[in-house]
Image 1 (cartoon, one colour):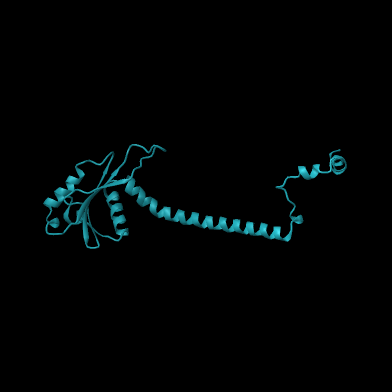
Image 2: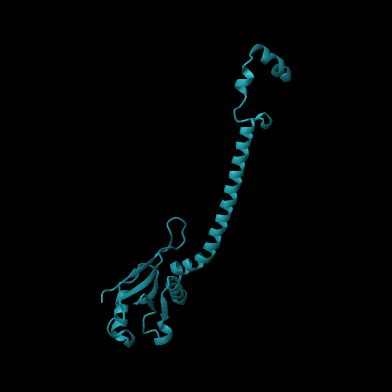
Length: 187
């Protein structure tokens, strides 16, 4: 019955009904012109190339994150030697020559001495469960005043402390997270 309506009744009684009812989104590829067919193929090729490029970029991003995430985690959440190692690695990656002072002078010295373009910076690395203590810059001043390594004209151009402040939780997902803060005492 439906077939008879579509094939005979509608064309005879309402000739434009089938044309109006046909969706403009449904097209028979066999009825396309050569120009339409070429453009449809070009669009499909562009879409495949875009998807392939996006896959390549996602793979590159995953590889970069696999390298950066462990260092970022040590910087944000590390304590003790892992945090000191992370700060060391960042400074070395930036092109600085870094000396681990604890290994040479013991824990009475600051943690790192970074040298870059003729400038030397003393670095004290600490982690804290909340805001960094205000005494942190004072520790650098103490190191500057008591350690013979730091005496002499123009040995140091700056001193800074690296502190990772870790609040109890990140507001979005409950995991600890914050950025390191750098402080420079005046000398």
